[in-house]
Image (tube, rainbow, N blue to C red):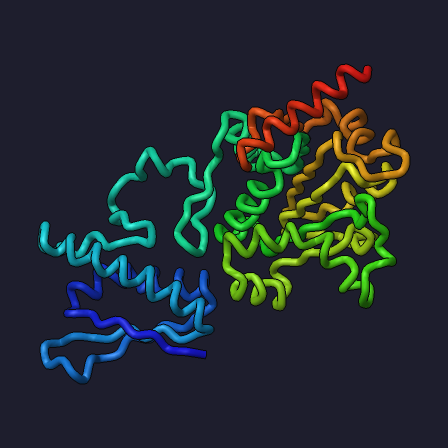
Length: 327
C-alpha cells in the first residue's frame, strides 16, 4: 500500500473538487478500490487541506492523476467566476448543472483511465440500444466488431446504475486446434487461457486491482459454461461469449439460467466454429428456434463494423470471397 497526496488551497476549491456530498471522492474510491482522506494542511495557515489517497501503487497513482486534473479544472473555474454553491466538478470535468456534451451523449462507460467507451459504427449503436431495451440479445458477427467488448461495457454500466447486482461471463471450453489436456496444471489453470479475453476487457475498463476486488467478492464471475448447469441467476447481467461453440443442449441450458431481474447477451461468430461437427452449433440452432420470440432481439455485424487493425477487415473480406469461390 502507498499514500499519494494532493494539496487544496481553500474551502472554495475543495467544494469544486470534492463534489456534492463528496460524491467525486466516493466515485474514485469505488472505481480504483482506494481510500481517500481529507486532512488540514499543517503547513498552511490559510485554511488549506490535503487529500490523501491510500491504496495499491498503480491505483493510487491513477486516482491522484485524475484528482490533479480536476484540481486544474477547479482553478480555471475559480478564475472565470466565483463559485455560487450550485455547481461542482464531476469526474468528467463538467459542472453538475451543465447538459451533457453531444460528443459524449452516447458514452456507455468511462474507463479507469478516463477513456469514454462508445459505439463506433451505426450497427454498434443499434446493438447498444438493443441491450438497453431487451432482456436477451444475440449478436453474431466476425472478430473485432465489438460484440463482447460493448456487452461488457454495458454490463458494468448496468452494475454501476444498480440495475443488476452482479455480472456473470461464461464461455464454452472448446479447443481451437489444440487439445486442452496438453496444457499444464489443474482444471482452473487449464481453462484460464480460454477465459483470458474476458479478463482483458475488464482490465481495460476497471483496472486489474478493481477487477480482482469485484471478482473476489463475487460481483463479477467468469466461469466455463459447464459450471452454469443447475443455477438460477437472479439480478444478473449474463454474457455468453463464443456462443458458436456451444451445442444445442448447452445453449438451451444457458438460456434457462436467467432468473428474476436478469438479462443476457449472447455473442458469437458462426464462421469460426471449433466444434467437430460444425453443423451442430447451438448458436445457429438457437437463431432458428428463437427468431420472432417476443423479448429476444438478434443483430448481425459485418466486416464494416470491425474496429481492430485495418488489416482485420481485409482478412475477413478475403476469407469471405474465398468461401464464395469454393461454393
